[in-house]
Length: 213
Image 1 (tube, rainbow, N blue to C red):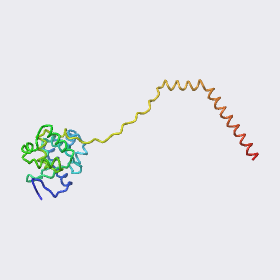
Image 2: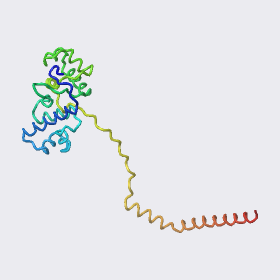
Image 3: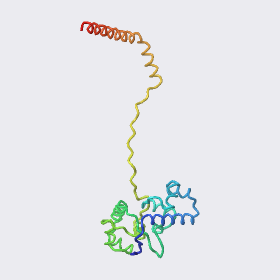
Image 4: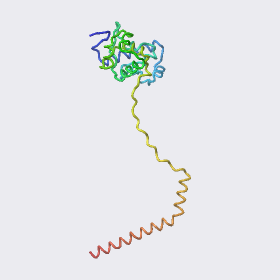
């Protein structure tokens, strides 16, 4: 089933494979080796190879960055044939950024819709009801609002603060501690002898008690 330029009835895996093939095709047409292109996009070589093989979970920020580096439209990565497109990605956080940018640029839904040849209802549905615009319409909105991959935020993993280790003693402090122990060695020996004598006396008393018992 095909409606409004979007092809449906295809799985996410099929879409990822198709996007991966497009990335590889445009990269090779640009004479960009995988190592150089991966570095420009800010991903590892393994990740790029996974994308081109259709084996990586995609996100909007990543695909927008790839399209920017390849100098092609975001929607070109989703294109199939006969000007049809795979469905766009669904990321609610991205539309929150678009909503804020619309407000910052003082657009109304009506004026924005007119600019991209859509309707206020469609845009309202994208922003408020989690409807997904086609990749082509999404691209037009982002272009009009000057939204690039740098504007799209990706939540970073939380890192627990590292507990500071107790400060180590300097060598001089350790030497002073050793000297202190040596200088008071007689006191330590006397204390130890007293403990031994008390323990011996206690043992002897217990032996007497056992004999009387």
